[in-house]
Image (cartoon, rainbow, N blue to C red; front, side, top):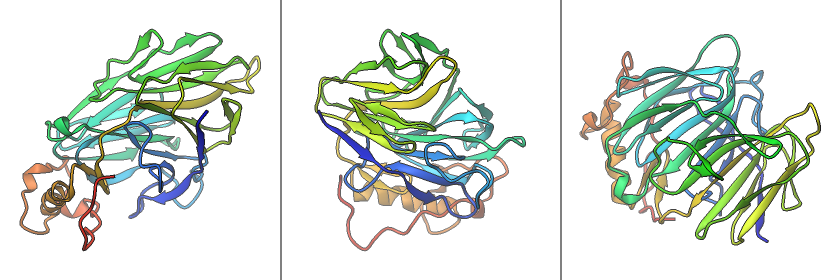
Length: 309
């Protein structure tokens, strides 16, 4: 058995953005399969409460490259806008998968009086897909039954059910709503690993307690079981994320590349979109109504070469 617990670390988006509880990436655990960030906010999974210093969820306009991102909401709604012309309201239980590819800019803003709460997720794009054109896909998963439990599959395949949302490496993502003490047993394909994120109540992975906000990482075994202390009339939710281990990659901010030079190219062009430097700003088209100065800055590259991890 190989079950490792990761505790949340609070990371700030900065510039008035949302405070989040980050379980991935951390030192020694850059990703879980191809899921390379798992950020909870709005008081779920150990994140800062919506009543704290950052009362509303949202993200200043910012760039991505070499990856896909989505936000799975439990409460409230967010308005997604991007440089492709998308202007959509994302609600609890809805998928809006944003594939950045060779470069894209988006923003998320709160909608209505009910603060949004959920988990922001990111997927590594494999090398052959990192320079594809940016795209957006929307989907409403229909929850299905797994024994006593309800499962909303937003990415990939679980059992005989799947999501049509396009991803570019083997992956699965689902919200499991436990309604009894019966275990949910899942196989682990070769070269895969899984993460189980406890949300507002603990769950148990192969008998190991996972406190709220912690992520259990499962690898090196053929299967695993997840249980919860759910009785009649109660529901205990958790996120199950998994997939095939990615090829080594270089992460920097919201850019994922094969090497230092690929990252530096994206940083140069994104800075140009911000009105800084002499790169190609067309690589990062801005959403309607967003000025170059509105973009969140990318941290300066270090004076040493970044190496794949």
